[in-house]
Amino acid sequence: MNEFAIKTESLGRVYKLRGVKKGEATERVALDAVTLDVPRGEFFGLLGPNGAGKTTLIKILVTLLAPTSGRAFVAGHDVAREPQKVRPRINMVSGGESSGYGLLTVRENLWMFGQFYGLDNKTAWRRADELLEIVGLKDRANTKSSDLSTGLRQKMNIARGFMTDPDVIFLDEPTLGLDVGASRDIRSFVRNWVAAKTDRTVLLTTHYMAEADDLCDRVAIINAGKVLACDSPAVLKKHLQREAIFHLDVSPLRNGMLGVFNNLPGVRQATHTALDGKSELELILAEDRILSDVMNTLTTHGAQILNLQKREPTLEDVFVDLVGLSMAEAEKAEG
Amino acid sequence: MTTHPMTPITRDLSWRMFFRTIVARSYPRIIGQSRERTWIFFETFLPFLATVGYIYVYRAINAPEDYIGFVVVGGAMTAFWLNVMWLMASQLYWEKENGNLALFIMSPASLMAILFGMALGGMLATTLRAGVIIVLGSLLFGIKFVVVDFLQLFTVFVVTMAALYGLGMLLSSLFLLWGREAWQISLTLQEPIYFVSGFYFPVKSFGFVTAAVSSLIPLTLGMDAMRQLVFASGKALGFISVTHEIAVLIVLAFVFILAAKFWVNYMIRLAVKEGTLTDRRR
View 1 (tube, rainbow over the protein chains, first blue to last red):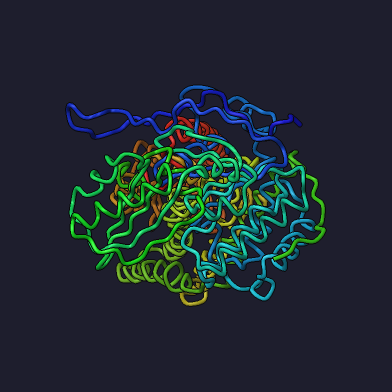
View 2: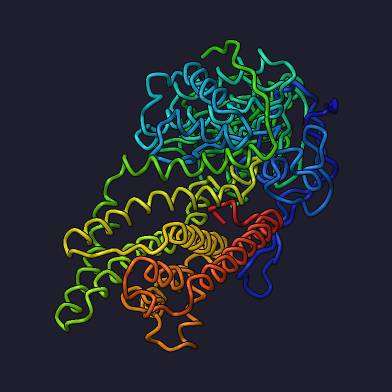
């Protein structure tokens, strides 16, 4: 197999928009010249807000969507020209997936999907049992999948993805909408799988920064179809360590206040989230002493400081630093 | 969660996978018989009720007794038609809605094998329903079957099913492309098709041209041939000879299955090009 599990070269995807009014854009760029190399055995994360292009990229890589420009290779094969060579080597699990048949038991669903990948009967049943034990669904093996809760159903989906022992697995927001316990279980399973199978590759898309930070060897930060940065979480965060990051809870701010902060000398980025009865400010400052200017500005505008915290940079801060918006704001801007 | 050594896999991507896919995809339909029993009412009792209505009409007008048998055979075959029109034809559309279609396309399995699996599952499940209608009808109305040639009868049944479910596979691909519009069309055509295909009377009554046109629906010739083979007066009321009907049904089966293959391939190309068919949000 090729040294790279995944390789993209200036990959682009443009959607034609239907039913648009005269004068409106007729196309939407979902991916713009994305170039990535993911070596075999890497746990790679794609991080970005909803609408950033993560799912579009995954769909191209799993042969469900053709690129409009550039090329993509998975397991050494061109996804557009040789999809039949790529498909046996990959699998995908998406968050909120409702695949399979509700009338079938969990075990039967896994067996069925195993058959679509050429597994013989005996191996398919055996692997289904083994995976159900690993993901903690052994006692639900004979439960109809329609009777499972969302969390248990997603564990079944995860088991489905790993039934075929793929060389490359694509996890598209696998913990979306799950409670803390179920998310932790799924992360733990995937982490252990990668540790046990060092030649297997995982591509994870998520908009949960902590998830990417926790699991990934490297992450690519993507927004509006473009890859803005790609490195290990530690290196990405290190760029911000020269700067001071503060979290402030203040009394509700007036509209336009954010602009005032962003114009203060030494304020690299300021983002604001309005909550019930207060405002949250995230500030990236060139150095600690700029905080006094921020405090003075707040006081001048009659804002009351409720809480102040200096903290270590996170991937969210890296995103804010690169995009100038928080993930939530970027999603709103996209929407 | 921890991992431990698991059974290693070998992927057999040869023709065996094609057949494994067929069996695996037919499994939900077959096993569903025992897990979801509402079909007993909706797919056996309701078609049987319609059949009984015609039987009483024929009895009231003193129609030949074989006509009662004709109606029961028609009622049994209605179960297959309903299965093809309402389950088989819309199946890929629902597979898309619940996310299975994307998993089918990105797997190494052939989508034709998936369609064959849907057809096989639907056919086996419906054979049970049709059998219930035949047995109930025969017992309740004392129908006398005079089977002329069992082998020919079996052949007619097999080629009728091949042509009928070939049509179902074709419709499934078309429904996926046209969505709810196709649903409306099939709803509109349901009663006219019952009428022209001779579900409740010999299709010969229409005259040659109309009967020939309605023979494009595989059940028309299938039912006509079966009636010729199981009732004493069947041959006299038959449209064309059973041998010719078998030949036409074989041609129809090939045409529908090849057309289904063409549309499935077209559909996959379109899905991959436009990214619309595997995403229910688009």
